[in-house]
Image (cartoon, rainbow, N blue to C red; front, top):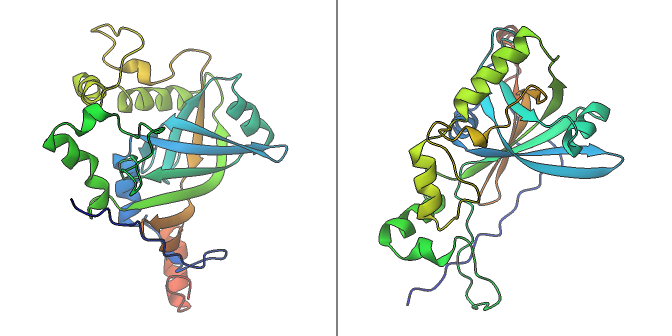
Length: 248
């Protein structure tokens, strides 16, 4: 029997800016993560109580209304996160590119079924897919800090963003097959014409939230961290003139 390898518990001092990277383009690993991840975690806060939501999202390098990278989300106008955003637009987003499953521990725990369910480990293909997070293809998370903007209802920008968000979050047969493959059960039947659009909050009352991608932090699974900041090409050129390269 193969011994279970312990997870690395390395850490790097990160209370302040660490390995700063300043550029007019996003770090490739951040852009790749934003393009490939299915969900993100949105953290809002009001009255000193943080609130975290799992969100569908759409990443765009630019829009007709904003030349810089943005993240589009939608929210129910009466939700806790919407009320938080109205009172405090500061947010933190977490996106990661690894498969979130917990492997068996060295000491079996009969009270924990584990994730994924047993159905997902009954084939070599399932095991291979579930262990992708240990490969070089899946190794980082990125935190994005910024301010959220609730787009004006009925505006052209809101209409454009809703269309793009719906297009990016409409899933077909593959998503349904994945749910069955991992032993999930579908709570509500889905019509053939729906094509997975139920994954996206759609409706006249839904509010569109936009977060500009300006700065954040990359963390790898070994505990290493690197801060990054996105600046305009003009600012990057000016920094180069004064000999400031990547924060130094």
